[in-house]
Image 1 (cartoon, rainbow, N blue to C red):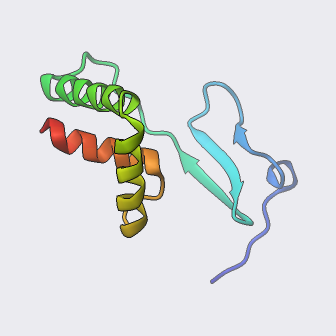
Image 2: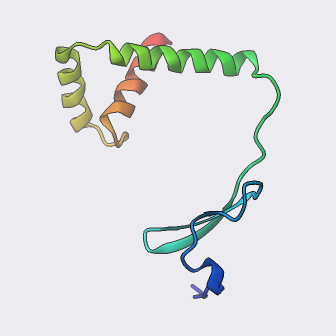
Amino acid sequence: MATFSLEIPFRDFRGKICRHSQIIYKKMYGKRFTSAICNPNVSAPTEAQTAQRNKMRNAVASVKQLTQAEIAAYQTAFKAQSTYRTLRGYMIAREMLKLA
């Protein structure tokens, strides 16, 4: 693996060069990364996108209305799995499956 040295202006820089820039410089885990921002979709959302957004919105709302007993059940199930990294993400995914 080749080693390289960034030019002086970019050694400790994080973020965008300007507001309109499409390139991001950042330092994570002791390494420097450069990435480009994809062009965002500026057209109106499709029916499938709107349905997915509503499904996610409903799942988050149902997570907020869980009782303490249901949260405790999710916590025990969360500890037994290895796919999800956060309890909140796990609960939202399970609630989305209920809505399907």
